[in-house]
Amino acid sequence: MPTTDPRVALPSGDRQYHIDLGPGELAEYILLPGDPDRIARITERLESVEVERRHREFVSVTGSYRGIRISAVATGIGTDNVEIVVAEILALVPKPTFVRIGSSGALRPEIELGDLVITTGAVRLETTTSWYVHEGYPAVADPGVVLALVEAAARLGLPAHVGITATAPGFFGPQGRPIPQLPIRYPDLADEMRRQGVLNFEMEASAVLVLAGLAGCRAGAVCGVFAQRDRGEFADAEMRRTTESRTIDVGLEALSVIVEMDRQRDMAAAPLWRPSLWR
Image 1 (cartoon, helix red, strand yellow):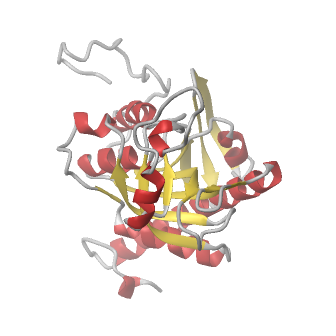
Image 2 (image 1 turned 60 degrees about the vertical axis):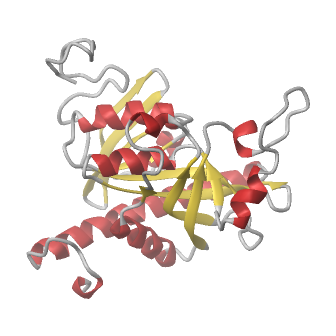
């Protein structure tokens, strides 16, 4: 991240300090899974691979999917990791499009294990983004990315719910999960979020949406449901694998939809894609 600002104090050079990627090694269309192991499953779906990298917990791949150059960079767990990954990607790609693909816990009774939740906006329970924006600043998904994710799920025949996500800074106390040895401040947090119409808990989306929005980039998120908090259910290993595959497939399909939307926008010389441009 070359800079003349002495407050940054990072090593000089073109390679990014944490993700260890350099100029030209990332595509414009980028999936952001949390789990580093998810990169191998994404790689299996690519037609060709040009870059594979692992540095610390950050694993990445760039290759071709249906003739589209895409990348996937694992953020690890939490918004603090997302901040690092997004900042370093922005040093290499001026205007990337991000799609977070993750796992989550559903809060609404109508959402089943294995379903998908497409985020329109996120409750910022985390504090990472407060170092960038006012506490009242909204974490909002790009509407075109939301529509592409909805279209992708429909094409694949997968159950998807669309609405508000809550991004928590942890897995136990910050999501209202009681811990025998540790008291938690907000034991009714899940009920409160449910009453406010929040669909799911997860741990990264708000940072992706806020930071992308500040940089003038598009971003969205889709998460598979591993836990049904309303009924106290958790997916077994087979269901988690199936749900993870669904999430990856929808993320990749959504990128191909976004590429087509961009092509239609450019052909029409329109400033933004709109539904009437679809052919």
